[in-house]
Length: 153
Length: 357
Image 1 (cartoon, rainbow over the protein chains, first blue to last red):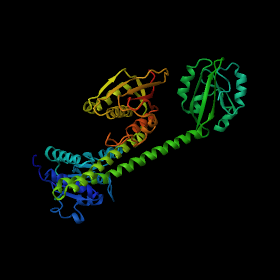
Image 2 (cartoon, rainbow over the protein chains, first blue to last red):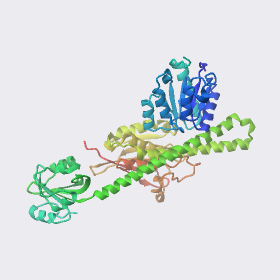
Image 3 (cartoon, one colour):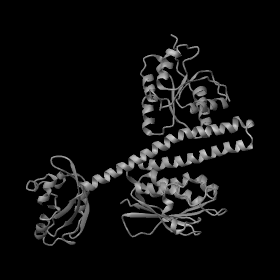
Image 4 (cartoon, rainbow over the protein chains, first blue to last red):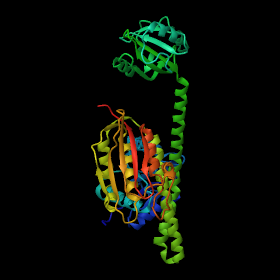
């Protein structure tokens, strides 16, 4: 497998089991990107703004991709997405891949309306998750030109 | 309810009878203008004296086109029946279940009863069904998240920690994984079952033949792996329904026929038109050479998760035929097991509403 370029992935996921399984999938595939995990929508916005506990950008780099669950405590995934796309700074360009268990058309349509770049449904089996992570890595890190996002200016 | 027999010979006497009855009665001229209306209409808020010379459709919220068409095609002595949604005065809607005949004078007599409550009850029932479906959907959806974890981690145990487990430990982990897999299949079945009811089903006319061909295409892998032969005997006509649901019905019945055969027997499936004398329906049959179903189980097989065999004999969850029945009900059709005996194969009969050319 081609070695992907470095870049942090921000995983917004409240289910500790899903976090572990996603991390295991990345590990098994030898995907090298550091994964940062936050567990609710408010933490996600704080992370993206580099606020509070996430103020240190060396420790918490701005991500090149956000994997966003929809059903989240405090602030739902779609709210985070709407907030991100309404920002006036370049952080609004961040590619967002929704990763959720909801297959409902209303969620899918709303996510794209709000500017999601992709919408993926959590597979039932780990084998499916491996395939999914492999494809995400291939597509977003080897194929896709990513926007310029400098948050240190 | 038929106060006047099959034709109206003396409409003035008939009218006198109707006008004094509990029926809502109208006499319409050939253009659909009201000639006379009886006093019963007061309970829908109309003044019967003001109704003459108005067109009947002004009273109707829904159903007037169908009625106009039906009346236009009516021969003397023939009768039509149906439901009209009436605009009550000053507001609100009511349901009139009517019958109408053409008189010898060329006018139409229409009489009916108030079905507003029945309609409301039916709507409440539909709402309850929808609520139940959405409850089942949510529950089965939410149950899948912890299940994913159980499957994921039992698999992780087997892969990442295999050297720390003895054979019994590995067997236990495998059993957790397999049970998880089975539960996932059950939940997927429930999700599909509830989705059939929640589907925003938009009735339309679809080619039964095209739906069948699509289902056969989707079943190709299974047909090949079981070395099944499938023969379509007749070209199937268009019917009322929903493409997605009809494809699902055929696909589930084909899967059923491929699965329930004696070991070593290649499935033989035949699908065709069932000869039928009723013009308003289309009947298709699907015949298999499977193990058949004893008579006492003919009703049970259509229930959710009802199984007649152990999972070792025939793997599966037992939801397939329940999906078929629900889908057929949603599109206003019916599925029956018409001929099946233990050991002699089964014949399912699908009844659809015919689409008029």
